[in-house]
Length: 332
Image (cartoon, rainbow, N blue to C red; front, side, top):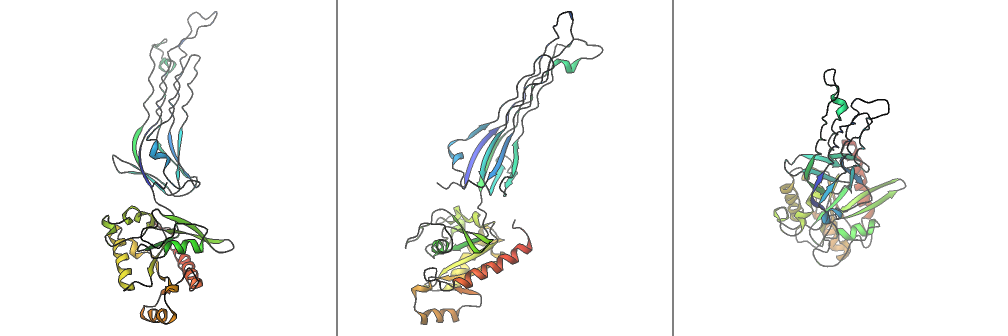
C-alpha cells in the first residue's frame, strides 16, 4: 500500500540519574564520594533508506521511544548510554515538527541521517559535588529528560521526469513501454491510483527516473478527483512532461488546464522545464495525425507508445532537457 503522509510522536531517552556512593574498602574507613554520572539518553534518528518506497509501517505504529541512560554507580562508574532508535524512511521524506511547522529533516539522499529528538544528559554523581568545604556530599543530580516531538512525515517522490495529464491520457502506457515498471493500465479514467516510478535507460551508464502521477482533472488543486493527493510528488521533478491524448477536442486548451492546476498548487511549477507530448497517435490515421501536427505550435511531440512512433524524438528531447537542467543546479 502506498502511504505518503503520517503523523507520529517520538520520545528521546531520559538521562540516567547520578549516584550517591562512598568508597568502602578495607583499611579506608572514611573513603570519599565515588558516585558516577548517569548515562545519556538515546536519540531519535531518521535515516533515508532507498529500499523503502512508502511510509506504510508508520501507519500502524504511532509512538517511538529511544532507551533511557542507565544510572551511575559506585567507583565512579558512568551509566551506560541509552541506545538510539533509528526510523528508516524512504528517500524523499520531509519531516516537520507539527507544533511549529519547522522542517527538521529533508532526507533527499540515501543514507542521509538527521537527529529528530536528542536524548537527555545524565545527572552528576556525588563525586562531582566534592569541594574543599564539603568532602562528603550526599547529593546527586537526576538525569535530564529527553526531547519529545509530534512529527509529520511526508514523502515526496524524487524523479527526474514527471508525467502530468488528464485521466486516461496514456501516462501509464508510456511508463510501462519505456521502463520495467508495470503500472495498472486500462481504458477507463483513474486507473492509476498511486504514483509509479520507472527507470528508463537511454544508453550504457545513462538513465533517468520517470514518475507517472495519477491523472488530474480541472479543479484538482482544489481537491477534485485524485490529483490533489499527488501533486506534491512533482514538486521535485526536474522536467515536466504534459501528456495529452491526440483525441482531445482542443489539445492546446487541455495543456492550459494542466498548467493552471499546477500553478494553483505551486506557482513555480509551470516555470519548470517542460515538454508537451501528444499520445495515442496509433488511434488516428496518418492523414489526421499529420493535420493535427501542422495545427500545433513547434515543440509538440507526437507519440505512440504502442507502435513506437515518435519514441526516439521523445527520449532525445527528454535527454536534452535533462542535460540543461543539470547545468542549472538542483530543484528546490
